[in-house]
Amino acid sequence: MRRTHHRLPSLATARAPSRAALCPRGSGSAFSRGFRSTRAAQAKLGIEGLASKANLSGAHVLVRLDLNVPLSKEDGKTITSDKRLRAVVPTLKFLTSQGAKTVIATHIGRPKEPPFPDSMKTAVVEERLAELIDTDIQCLPETVGEATKAATASMRPGSVVLLENLRFDKGETKNTPEFAAALADASNAKLYVNDAFGTAHRAHASTAGVCSHMALSAAGYLMEKELQYLQGAVDSPVAPLAAVIGGAKVSSKVPVIESLLDKCDCVMVYAPRHFLSHYP
Image 1: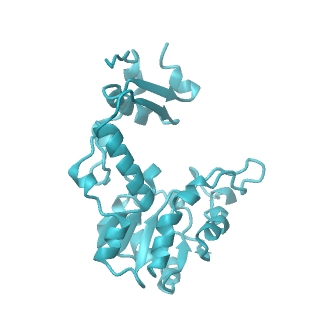
Image 2: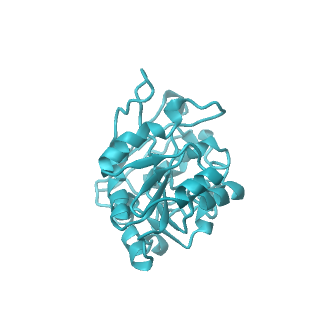
C-alpha cells in the first residue's frame, strides 16, 4: 500500500518546542523526537534485572508511579477509574514479595499554590491501592524532610509508604538539584524504579534529577511493557498503520505528529477546540 499524507498547513503556528525542550539532557528519555528506539532503550534495566543485581530484601526502593486517577466531581475523593492503580500492581507486588521497603512517589493533579485541596493529596488513592496490592500502606503527610526520612527509616521489609504529592513542591517540576537530593535523602533509597510511563518523558526531579543519587535505576513492569510495544510499533510497523494522538498540551504534540506522518498511513488527532482552531 502506498502511503500518502497531507501535512497540516498551519503546523508551525502551534509553536513546536525545540529538541532540547522535548528531550532534555539528563531526562533519561528512551525516545528521541523521531521516535526511534535506541540500543540503550532496548538494554534498559528492568525490575527483575534490578533484583538480580541487588538484594532487595530489606532495601529501600524509591518507586515513581503515576497515580493521577480521575476523581468524582461531586465529592473530589471517589475514584471513578482505578486503571492507573491496577497498572502498577505487578511492580508493587514484586517489590513487596522480594522484601523491599517500597517508597512510592507520585503526583496528583496540577497543584498551583497552597492551601492544596484534599482531592490533590495522595491519601485519596491509599485505600484502593492498598486493597489492590493486599498490603497496608502508610500515607505520609510530607514528601521530603526529617519527619519523612524518619518514617521511611523505620519501615519493615515488605512494607509500603506513600509520600505526599510531589508537585506540592515547585522543585519537582523545575527539577531543582535541591529537591532531587531531598527526595533521595528522605526516601533512604539507593535503588530506584520508574513505572510512571505517562510522566517519564518529563525532566522532573522524581524522574530525572533523583537518579543521580541512586546506585541503580530500573524500569517497572508497566514501563517495560510500554517500551516494548512502542519499539515494535515504530521500528517495524506493519501496514496499514494508524496512530491516534490525544491530549491538551499542543506544543508537545506537534513534533510527534510530524514524526508519525512518515511512519503511518493515517494519523488521527483528538484534541480540545483550541488545538483544532489552528487548522482550517
